[in-house]
Image (cartoon, rainbow, N blue to C red; front, side, top):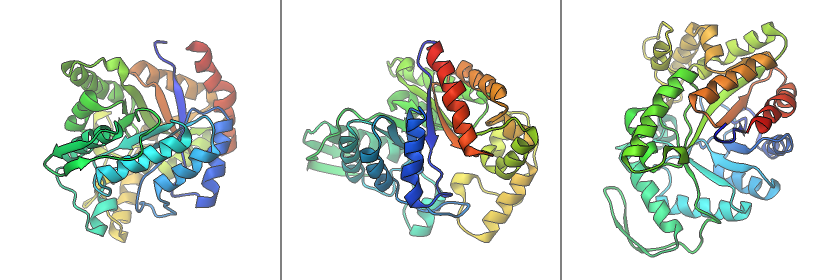
Amino acid sequence: MSARVRFGVMLPVPAAPVNKLIRIAKVNEEAGFDSIWIPDHLIFIPYGTTPEAWSILSALAVTTERVLLGTSVSDPHRRHPAVLAQTVATVDQLSGGRVLLGLGAGEAMNLNPFGIKWDRPVSRLEEAIRIMRALWTGDVVDYEGRFWRLEKAFLQIRPARPVPIYLGAHGPRMLELTGRLADGWLPTPMTPELYRKRLKVIHEAARRAGRDPGEIDTAIYLYTCISEDERAVCERLEAYKGLIAHSPELLREAGYEIEVPEGFKRYFEMLPGDENLRTFMEFSSSVPLEAALDFSISGRPEECLEKIHAYVRAGVRHFILINIGPDVRYVIKVYTEQIIPHFRESS
């Protein structure tokens, strides 16, 4: 293989209480995973315990030793770029240079209920990236942009090394921005074929910008459900299939015809409220189980290994896994003893 395949873990927010997240991260580091990620939300749908992401990463910076630490994903709306740059640099210093900054265009649930503006998100994101990278150099920065103005601005802390920025990109403009500016791509679940098509857009944008596409880390976050018991896998996927195969547009592109309830909103557009949850549950019930299998790494261990190979052939080099069991310890064991060693030996 041309590049080492890495495996990371998404912390179970909003399912786990805050005091268990540190232990979960340590267990996965000791199991051999390469990275630990946390969602950066104010609230979640479905509801649960949603801690502030960078506070948790600060704790992980001093309680873990080896794993990379990232957000999936932060946005340019809730924090001024200088404040986010300072936060990231601080956590990177605490961790000895292990931070990965995931950024996206924003989600309604994190913005609308709190009166936070959500305008021109892609342009705002690009401007925030340029400001943060300039401030991380330690230089004095003058910047006149559409959204922010800096005059003789500088930070008195720098990251331990240039912090890689991963973009949660899905639409054409975000994919193009990833190719031009990002260090990594971190989309939500999709099939290998859908991934391959979008990665081609990123690589073409990178070449137009004079970049080597191979410099962009190609990640994806995927649900994983592993068991020798096929019925147990199916039951688990039934409970999660609306989150796994989350996009009607992607489902149709993958060849699935589904009924979308009136008033349904895509996940990043959803707002808290019983009506949103009702339409989400209606949508989830219409998602075929086969689609949940196609959009995840699920099945018996040997089936999951073959699925991972399919994603690797599509260009994935960094898997961010959401472990949904049915026995989470068994899933970790399969990755530790079978899957991760297989790709270490192949690299």
